[in-house]
Length: 123
Image 1 (cartoon, helix red, strand yellow):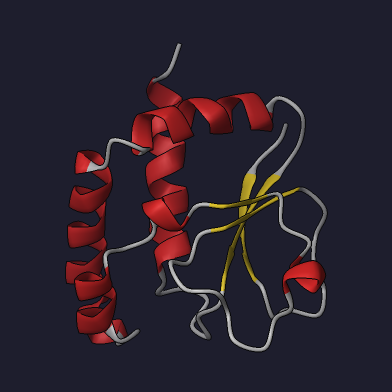
Image 2 (image 1 turned 90 degrees about the vertical axis):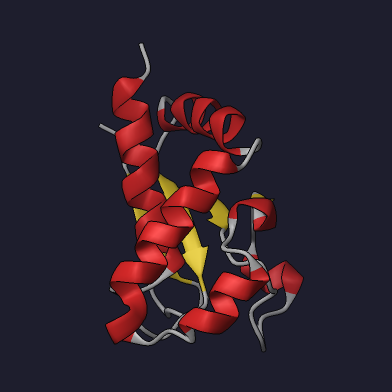
């Protein structure tokens, strides 16, 4: 069964799968050719204000997570993206790539949870 995986774009070991960058900003030090992306979904990344407020502070993560989920729910790009994900997962794994150093407290983790929940509700 195909799955969604969160992968730090700077990681030396990169699993195979459909590669989607889920950051609003391009990761520093990564050349576009080297990133080997299939998509860049910056419209689904947290807003600038939310990202700036969060500052990748683990203590702020619960509030960040809730606010980001609310942003996703209000984002018109979200429902078509979930349907697109459903199609992609029929072909193989999907990788949500991100630049944050913290592998547990970042937007890719929240996006993965939201996507899996939304996919479970699709027919």
